Image (cartoon, rainbow, N blue to C red; front, side, top):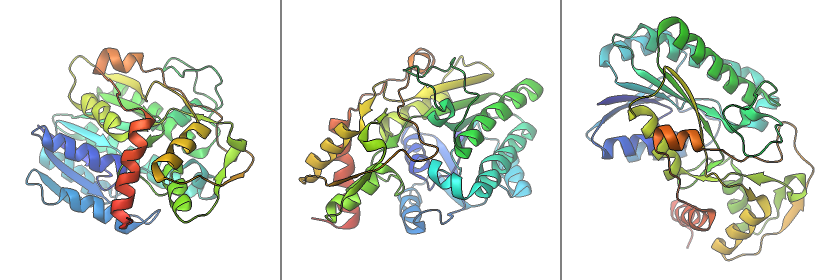
Length: 321
């Protein structure tokens, strides 16, 4: 089968592409290689894919409506996996216009390209645990209300879910939204806490710990997320419109994550305690029972295993002994 992956040079996009190819599928990957974070990191990820015979990489911006429509029409994809987006809760507070262009206009272009394709592919797309906003009932379930986002990033992800529902209803397009919970692991993003903490600890600098450390996150290792994404593209029996939580089904205290990271690095982290940042939430925790039922989703990686794997990759990538 043949799949289109948008954001193929991204953290999750690269790993999903590699897994699909390992499973015997063809992948066309697109990315615009923007400079939100290190373009070199994105190029290095993409270099992992380029030698693979079943991979075709194209530099393309999602907002190029004609080019994307032509690409989808040409290849008759079995599925499209939209992982391209402007990420980051905190960045959205200072740069709202970027999210409107990438996450709303870009997603609309993907919907339109899939809608007009013949046959229509299944569309799987990245949503986020941030859509749950300030919900305090844990764990978060797909049936919980998600009408009160507290960041523009979260609002754009919820908008994607509503846009997808409209296209499923009006045009019969099968859509699957995936609410990711704090994904980490090798080839991760430099703006995420795991990377930022690792960088500062190795440099002997104090790390910034928000809400005075009183935070919980459902840290999910990238290999487990990839399993869920691939299942969303290939599973039989899915409804025309689906939403799934993809998390580790276990919430961790932030201070426990920091302790585990320090142990993996062989250093005692120094911490600067700070108040909660605007747009952030105190806790996330995924109820994954629906994904277990319909996708056979089964995350297996605790932070005691996943964090040392990230540290090993980080040191190797940066040439740190």
